[in-house]
Amino acid sequence: MPSKNVRKNGERGVMRKKSLLLSAFIVGVGIANLSVAVENAKEPVGRTVVFNKAKGNCLACHAIPNDPKAESPGNIGPPFIMMKERFPDRNKLRAQIWDATVANPRTSMPPFGKHQILTEQEVDQVVEYIRGL
Image (tube, rainbow, N blue to C red):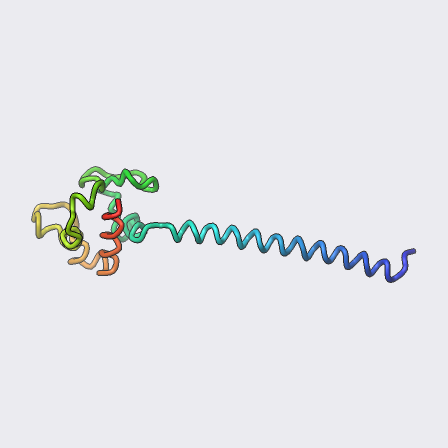
């Protein structure tokens, strides 16, 4: 039968291994969470609103060919391409999103700001995202 010291040293070795495994697991989970956070941090401002079906839902009518995450786009409205060239004045694009009926009373585009579908801040975020395409 091993002495008490040998048993204690063996138990300490097992405890050290368990501690190392637990530490490695915690570090691994932390790295995984960090990579998700970094990926989310890279998401362009406004994309969440543009893709949100309860908010902007721009994909219901517009194609966004320069964003690989834009799946199943509609074709009612023009595609979001070359937006800085099409709207060199940021305020004109914002006005279009705020209330497209001003420029075209027969438009099918909802007046997102006027009808409070989007907040002022969300309209600004959508403008930033769209102009970046």
